[in-house]
Length: 188
Image 1 (cartoon, rainbow, N blue to C red):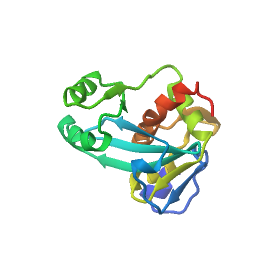
Image 2: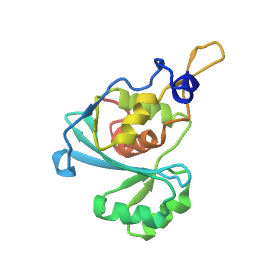
Image 3: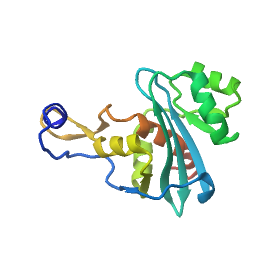
Image 4: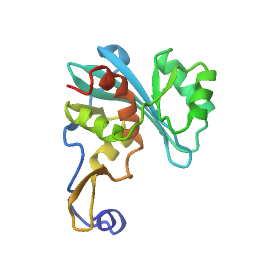
């Protein structure tokens, strides 16, 4: 189906989407507009590096800030993060401890995400329990979330594993809300 839609430009409908609890919003927000703000980073270089700002209000998630760029160094990320987060913790992809250490040396309160056997599924489940609003300026997050789907076996049965495509911003989203998810014990 991906080939049909994206390579040949034909119409089709994606099934097995992971997130159906989101909607785009035209209004833009600032950190002050929320009860709490969380920051997440998914490292990349050839793949995009992503920084997301996520505000929480009335139990709902608002993705209000997106940085989504390829070929960016830690110095670039640090320059973007420092004025944004103003010392607040930033949960980062723990796969690259050296990049987290480098951000810490640049004065960023970077902390590794707590990855584990079922951390991706737990993060997805937590996010699916609330409404997710994505600001118009967060173009790539909106694109990814509208394409993010479950893997299927060769018989077309849905598996409890996301396809590893269109997931850089969504990984950053999971990292951003991880402190809240762990604080609430994964509950609503």
